[in-house]
Structures are given as C-alpha cells and as structure tokens.
Length: 222
Image (cartoon, rainbow, N blue to C red; front, side, top):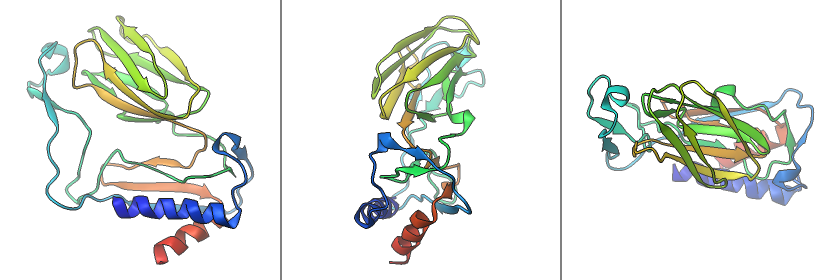
C-alpha cells in the first residue's frame, strides 16, 4: 500500500512540474477525452496477518443480528484471500480537466440495512447531494464529522433524506442511536478520477487523458 501511495504522489508531482495542470482542484473543467487511457492495479496487504476489527452487537439484536453472529466487523480493514485490500480509495492528484464528473450512482447514496452502512465508502461530487435512507425498523441517527457536520435521525423506514456536501474532503459517519459498530466514509471530490478497490483489492480509473497515463507508466517503469 505504501508503494502505491508513493507512486500516486510522484505522479502528482510530475504533472505539476510539466505544467499539465494549471488550475486548482475546484477549477476542474470537463473536456472531451478521445481515446482516453486506463490505469488499473491492486492494493495488497503485506506484513503480519491483518487484525480482525469486530464489535459486540449489544442492541436491537433482532434487527441488527438476525443470524445471531453476536459480533459485527467494523469494515475498517478487509483483506481478501489473495491479500487484496477492499474499500481503499485510489485517486489522481492535481487533476484540472478531463471527463464528466459522473461517479457511480451506487456510491452516491447510503442505506442503513441490518444496522450496517451500505456501501462503506461513498464518492460524492462537491456541491451535490448524498441520499440517505434506512431499511431498518429501528431508530438510526447518522452523525458526521470532518468535511461536513450534520446529525440526521431516521425514525421511519425507507424515507429518503438528502444532504448537500459543499466542502471537499473526508466525512466520517457513525450512528448516534447506540449502534456503535456502524461506520462509513464519504469522500467529497472535485474530479471523477477516484476509485474504490473491490473485494480483491482491484481498482480501475478510466477515460484518463493520455498525458496522465504516460506519466503513470513512467512512474511504474521507474
């Protein structure tokens, strides 16, 4: 993971040096991307076995734990059988122009189901709204800190609430209704070149301008 992160930082530095990027993140421009490139890879865990991060389910067990597992994973560190790390956000830094800011719909809305946030990682464009609802027949209260601060109660099932997110950055979510294991993260972003690794740790960034992919290949080859 450290190696991949270093490569992303090197890519950002190289782009700034060559003058490809002239605008700040908030100045992102949508431009035609013809024959765009693709950047893909895998985030892998190395070192000692990853610890299990689990919490006792001690409230509303009938709704939160219908299969009587007794504990719930915090979803903070999910390492697959092949060593791939799920739920890792991979992105390009200092991107000023490119494809439409059209992120996956599934990562722009949050559901509370069996007292778990789905999905665990959300990607929402700056100044747009995230949709939140609850499928559970118990009271949940979504509390946030970080790039946004709000406290939203969900006493009714399937009622959708929206919250506009105006500040780029990371938002931490938790339940103030006593379900202490519930947690999720929202990345509020200013460009579309973000991806979340799947269960095998794989990611893919598509329709990347050719200048960027050439720099990426150079960083990997070096």
